[in-house]
Amino acid sequence: MASFTRQLRRFGFTALACAVLASCGGGGSSDTGNNNGGAIGVCSIADEKQRFLTYMRDNYFWYRDIPTTVNLAAYADSYALLEGIRSYQDRFSFLLTEQEYQERFVNAEFIGFGFGTRVENQRVFINYVFDESPAERAGIRRGDELVSINGTAVTTLIQQGTYNTALGPNEVGASVTLEWRKPNNDNFSAVVSKERVETNTVLATEVFSVDNKQVGYYVLNSFINRTGTDLNSAYDQLVGVDELIIDVRYNGGGLIRYANQAGSQAAGNNVIGNIFTQFIYNDKNSASNVTELFQLYDGVRQLNLQRVYVLTTAASCSSSELIINSLEPFVDVVVIGGRTCGKPVGQSPRQICDKRTFVVNFETVNANGEGRYFNGIPADCQVADVLVGDWGVSNDPLLVATRNHITTGSCQAVGTQHDDISARILQSDAKPQRVPTVLDQWQREF
Image 1 (spheres, one colour):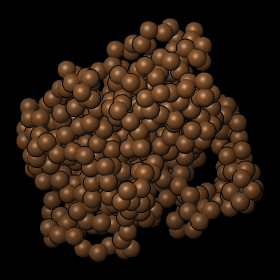
Image 2 (cartoon, rainbow, N blue to C red):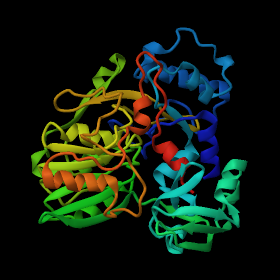
Image 3 (cartoon, one colour):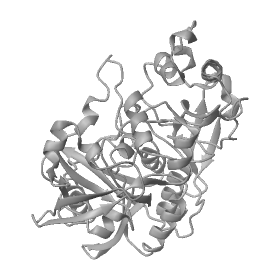
Image 4 (tube, one colour):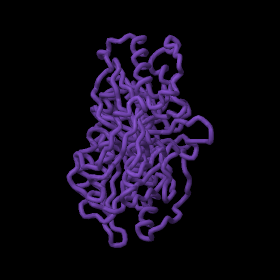
């Protein structure tokens, strides 16, 4: 996904993205696919900037913060224009080309090996691996450390600034020799070739016992077009559980209907038909304000649980947070991990020329009118996300804390506790800083 990555680096956007013909973020409604009057690909740069500015003045949630006078000639393109006129409150808005939108959000695939990574002290670890990807077939799993690429140590490549280049061109068939180390220090190596990787959104589903209770657990990594089917498959495996853990620790958000589906299938009759969220637009578009009820969407099975555990970090954003905020008026939601990213607003993607706008259009509140959690949703049990092995391993600190809570009804210290990046999200009167969300997540996928 080289072109996509280059654009992320160029503009530094760290916001939620969503899939075809729907709003996303902390809420949403349907999008017509209207390009605001311009045919795809025929606009000049000047025309596109003017169309985009007009759209922003009418539809941007914080339109009052746009300067009264904007010299369009001072901005090279629409990306620069967005950066120049965005509100100081806005950590989320971004633009994509139509091709980028279609490739990742609609088709749900990218060219690569099929793993997501994290970097710690110039060492690269595997956060997750997609099903049936080249990486999975080679035996690479969550918790492994990537040691070398074509014989050169990863730490050396990072120091030289050549790590991405060493992984080869963004082409199907591009091959490299990867060496990786398991958590037990066993080393493996293989020649791995890039393919078109399908990005399954449920990365793991398990059922385990805690104090004679059957506990269901699934890892939800994003909310895109295929998520409804993936959720349905997960809940089919969880019928009859006494407790449920939804792991969204790296989930930057996406289509809000699947946040609704996830919550509705979990709590079932305790929530279905009640208010899921209320979408509130700017005063120019108040006629678009709408209330959405809990509903199953693509779901079939429902668990009817009165308590749901949600595992989070500072990378849990937008629709992930919406699950928590929307369920809380009706059932007990226990948040384990770290404070979330803080995105109680959403975008209705609009096509303008050959771009898709993902600018904030609305905010969301739950059935009690609660929202505006721009400093994130705090964890009930604060626990650091330490990578110790594959999904569901018994010594995962977040799962250890959850098991303890199921057993005792209270939080117990588990390892080192800190609030990661989230403690720096908002500082008194300082301008809000960007926080890692789904685009950053995808930038770390190879």
